[in-house]
Image: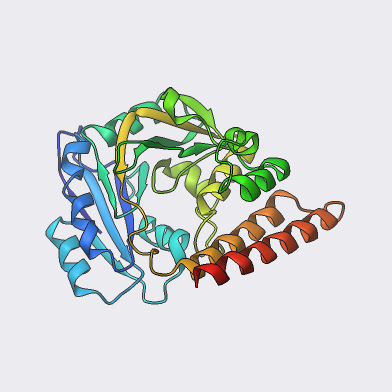
Length: 293
């Protein structure tokens, strides 16, 4: 556990904790850590969870920014690593910034998220406008996928990007207005700690992908809100650790999709629907992964 003081605080203790997960991310992690001081005007506790441990370079980098370092050579996946990092935070931490190591935080980005979150007690998560390296806004605020929109998006997004199912699934990022959404991208997300603990944190049964969809869905089921706040802006490089493992990542994505379907559509009545969707996802995963490999 570690923290760096970046501004005044009435208590002198950090009420926001930043947790990031590294998997051979030493080449980009410095870019994130060096932008934290401009993103917040109060004390900030930070921890790096290392799913590729032991990695002396990452540990040394974390320590140089007074961040905690948690080695997880067992690699529990993204959600499991976030849970492990959150468990190290002191009791003063009320908000958790979940952020990828290849994200650059803009000035005031964390403050803007916290300010929005504190406008209502039922807000569990607040997400920023996430820009890609070319300046375009990534559609990080989305509806929880339904059967119809999920199938339409999966089948047509590659060949027909503007199809109506994808449009319904993705919020229009060009509007850049505050809005309630079904879920927010886990690449950068501020989470109310009390709400996070109430629903049991991330489901670590998702090794990778869909853990943020599942989190937003469970918050909604528990009566909380997920809010998009484009006043806060970050830049996400993306695909820094997965680019050379496309086949494995495709298989992981589809396995997580199958898990989410089972959670959203439970019970014996919907058993035929689950079986059909799982079969379709398995076939699609096999085809795409074979081409990727």
